[in-house]
Image (cartoon, rainbow, N blue to C red):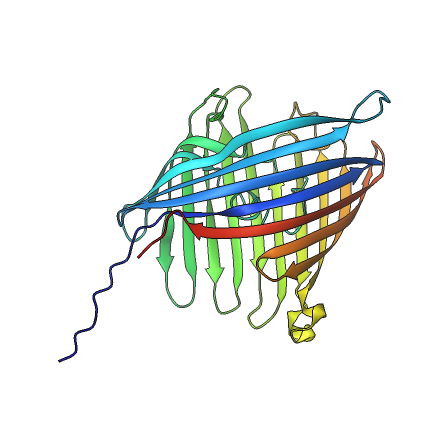
Length: 326
């Protein structure tokens, strides 16, 4: 009688992330940014997963005051460091430093190997409390799911922290999203409240649509705060359906439209000081072995002045186990 071998899954930590070189030219001044963003996913048994992502970058930018040459700045920081505890079929408990679950960009599109454009939307700081992460606890999971729809949720509380690596503001909030698999459509709403200093409320909605059997993608968000509101909408189409494995199949034309509207002066809220509209035109190229070239041109219109923005980047995505497995 033949006995099949017993296969035991190994809880091997994985190291993933991306590295790249980015340039950004705004108003005739060019900044150069080499960056690496490693991510660690380490399972501890079958119910706990430890996750962490860091960002290490150096920036070379022109000296101010008309001085010739460049100056350099270095940044090293943790984006998040959290433990995910599987508490049941519908709930995962998250503890530590986590990305604030407001809208979609903060959690899904900030990694350099995922985002299509090199810079974040103008409204990115609305609802993310200026730090993009919180320190405390979160509950998340699927509230209900069947073949027709899936309803998921995330609710968090963050304490105030002034630690250099774990800085955060006291806040609370969450997000609910409804996904309809038959049309591959997701809609959701977010709400956050700042609980320290000048207390503020933030709200937002998002819509994603990725039609089945298509290379088209549509992503969008609207967010509003006490001092400003705005939106962004991004579309892209991968030409692999037309290229047939040729050189053309690697291209992905992109377009993003965004606007912000200032209702009152905001203190360091990260948004433009005046009403701003901006159109971003991108063209990415996907190379083999997880290498991608990003390029974009943006035209920004504001009462503070109009400007052109040119950005390029070459990104490499890596993934490997922390040690060799059997």
